[in-house]
Amino acid sequence: MHDKTRRQTDAYQEVFAKVKSKHYRFVCFDFGGTLFDFTPLHVSAFLNAMEVPFDTPLASQVESAVRSALFRGVDSFEMMREVAAQTQKMDEQLCRDIVLKKRTLIEYYLDSAILDPNARSFLLRVMNYAHVAVLSRGLVQSMEDILARTFSVDPPSIRVYGRHSLDERVDKCALLETALRDSGIPKAASLYVGDAQVDRLLAEAVQLNFIHIQPFEF
Image (tube, rainbow, N blue to C red; front, side):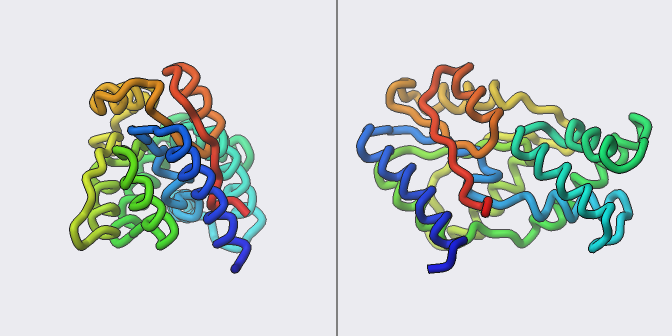
């Protein structure tokens, strides 16, 4: 088994074992970083939006800044400010223009995306025991499309929470609270799964059980 596959299998098995042993009836996933690897798309979108050539020292700086920002769970505007701080001086308006262009590129990249086989089979296993929802700062429609393409035959019922337009600012804590309320399941029987530092803080703020996994980091 390749290291990548083993890392994903181990991470997903940890969550599945907890769902079974703790009898969780509702599991909410932070979509990016746990079920779908957004990092390469964010890096490519920023490089294209900034018109930075790939395979250059500047491109490496951008990738480093993006990875750091994703781990901390900041939004695209904060991510852009960190990229700018490490690469070149940019005014606020230029940062905003690049972020909007980057978000448009991300949506273009996602147009044919699906979950990888490990994530797909893992979700199906979890749904045998619990209701499932996903949340993200991304567009709801894009995530719904990814899930529909992944489960093209008899798609499961997975509630999706996120932004509804590219320029909408979202509050992930509010999204998590809404997902929990919509589930109708007590917090004691619910679980949040995320990959970033902010996800742990969100779970603590909502007083929700939490598991931290990074199946796409090697």
